[in-house]
Amino acid sequence: MQRRTFLRGLGATISLPAMSSLAAPTKLGSSAAAAPLRMAFLYVPNGVNLDHWKPNVSQGAGKDFKLASSLTSLNPYREDLQIIGGLDHDKAKANGDGPGDHARASATFLTGCQAKKTAGANIRNGVSVDQLAATHIGHNTKLSSLELSTVRARMSGSCDSGYSCIYQHNISWRDENTPMPAEYNPRTAFEKLFGSGNAEQDAARRAQRKSVLDFVSDQSKKLSDKASKRDQEKLDEYLTSIREVEARIEKAEKMGNQYPEEAIPSGVPRGYQSHIRSMFDIMALAFKTDSTRVASFMLSNEGSNRSFQNIGVSEGHHSLSHHRKNPSKLKDIAKIDTFYAQQLAYFLEQLKASQLSDQGEEMGSILDNTMILYGSAIGDGNAHNHTDLPIILAGGAKHGIQTGRHVIAPDGTPVTNLYLSMLDKMNVNAKRIGDSTGKFSI
Image (cartoon, rainbow, N blue to C red; front, top):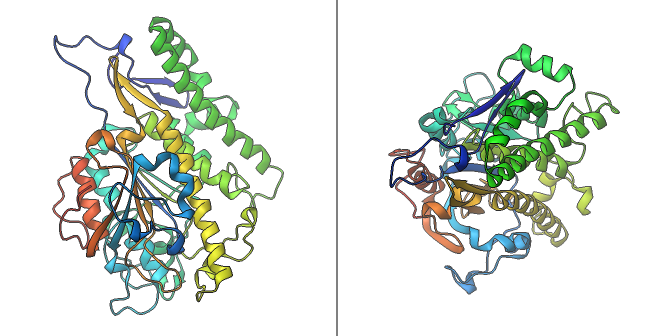
């Protein structure tokens, strides 16, 4: 068994985890290679209620910090993350371009570049950090990168004060003129991971209404029969996790058939939390199966005016963000921030529960081998400011990343300095990204 082994069937391609009992012989004295490092970027819109989001500065930075009330769901992962304050996105500011902070925020988030103010086809931005990484390491996996969202992207028209909707609906950019449209349908994202890549074969498999695993069952059984008990358990856990996600998508599709197609697209869960978690399931599977090592996820598009009835917030998010220091509105914003932090906790839980091993050597959890950046390019939605942004960097402990700390960057430090350091950890030698001025120690 080679390090990159696939199960293949009609319309199905599933990459396998390393199994020591089936591994090709190694030279005397050699050991398992270190687990590859992964990276994910998670975006939340409209800024946050900073008073309930940031650790209390009076408690000091460093290891001795307490998560603020909006982030208490992350307490089980406190030692796996770092809260980074003081980072800025200068290119999300007007800089002479007038209004349009929401469009600039999402466009700038991963590029650090000033988006050209246009509602036409002559868009211009910059290469995003995820795509810089994908260009260098994407050849190692089935997908060079994975882009997800919960909103169907608008690729034309004006969305914010003369800025094209493309800016507001995309955070990942292959080059300065080409965004990477995100998948918002879990079924489509699942097919990207486990489909064959042949449209006719994939359609034929789906027409039979069988699980993707049914088409590789003979191969998986033959492998299992040859594997050790420990590797049999690993393979079973691995395939079960794929089937569980597939089953949840199928359930959403069946529920969707009860409603008008334009209201509930096929495969998209009705509830917002269910939709977010379906996408996190897909991303976790992508990392677990090593189908990609680079991913991004817009939990919602910038300027979203979604209400959160399930947590008792009836007013739209964007409207609330213009709170004018109204205590009631600020309280509701904190509830929304808490909701998003809970979704992050759900994702971290999955990654932390998945352990990696190779040739009998334990390599830590997927979380230990993944950098997850979570945040926004707007600090306070009322001020539309792009300084001292809410940024969390989770995971990566097995690759020397400092976790379990609160750190405050020097005034004027670009977020892109953090991105340079993340690229460095991915062995991507980038001298600059956007407005970066140097590396930020992580």
